[in-house]
Image (cartoon, rainbow, N blue to C red; front, side):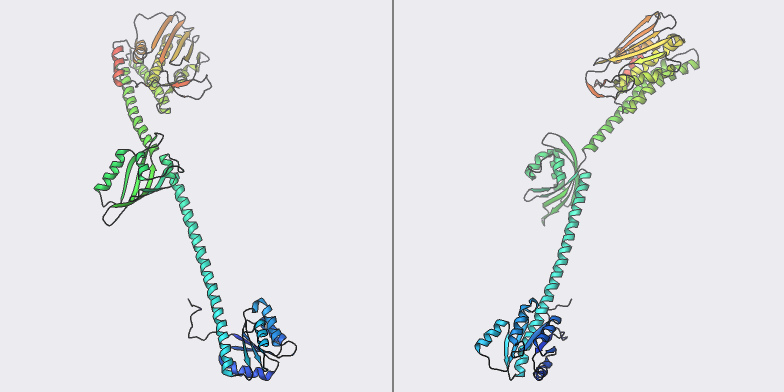
Length: 524
């Protein structure tokens, strides 16, 4: 780029010199003397004409005759100086008369910069004019350079502001991304022990940014000791490693523990010693908990599957019938009852099954013939092992009722009601209007299943009352004293708390115990 302050070999553009005199001959002589300067010469024969030229042209030097009609040189100089635009314009007085010191002082007061007496010495006049022309040109060059500098400063300032805004926006996006990913960034000066944390890091560690000052001394107690030692060992045994990623446990001041991944880059000095570590911390506590829940659920599903298969095995082995069709129907019914309970448990992720839904699923088919079946009771969630036992018990009671009891005739009716007393679900099964009932001489398969699963396996109680008007059965199923959650209230009854005993579910070994208990029972 061309520098206005550098003197080029190319001749600069000419500037304007204003010559003011009421005598044309004198103006012509001034033109001849100053022509070799190569500048533009403008002539004026009066003060008024001179002012018109000044308003139209940026003049470097004004040569003024002191003695002129109308307005003399002093008055013209005063008028020129009164205009803000011409405050710095060089004015040279030319005088053919002898001027006193008082006249000279007056001229300088009016803004003159020099005097040239008549007769004019050409070399002296040219030298004086050249000085002020060069000064004018340098002033204009400095002004141009100042404008160029101001332009560059303005452009650079705008560029810096734009760059700063981009950095600020980038930092904002980075902060949003870190917050969305449950991450925090940090920088550790190993030499001084000082740390720089972003807001996400304070959030992960559960400390107040206003009062907590991160440093090696303050952060070390918040990280599990064995994890710190593992990181130190990693850095010590792999001195060439520039990056690392490890899992660590953070213990917050309130005692809560968070699992995190620390990913960092290491800066070393010439000797290989670590001087700075920078990185991010990712909170993976939710992922860890999800993995643990998934593992527990997989074990639970495996446990439930083995339990269910053991019960199915017992049903298949111990069910007997007079013909294949009866055998198939008996086995399918019992397995279907277990499948219904399994479906309800799956819907709740094996948290439990609602008593009302277990009852409704088993008795739904018998409600199609009219209002013969009535049910009433609260929503109570049974633990998985109790739900499976109740499902099988309801199936055996319903099967017996269809074969021999109230549901075997059109005039019969069934009433099922249950309640929750805080520790137990007490279910009453009452039949009426069926064939006359009498107590059987021996216990069948269904009766032994009821007694083995409820009395022995879950420490409940089964009470059977063979009244002539119909069977009355009471099932007491312990649920434990500790409420865990509540099911939504349904349309069929009031709401009750969901309970959990905290006991282990029925194991396959326990199911085999039921098999041994009911072994030898006649099929049913």
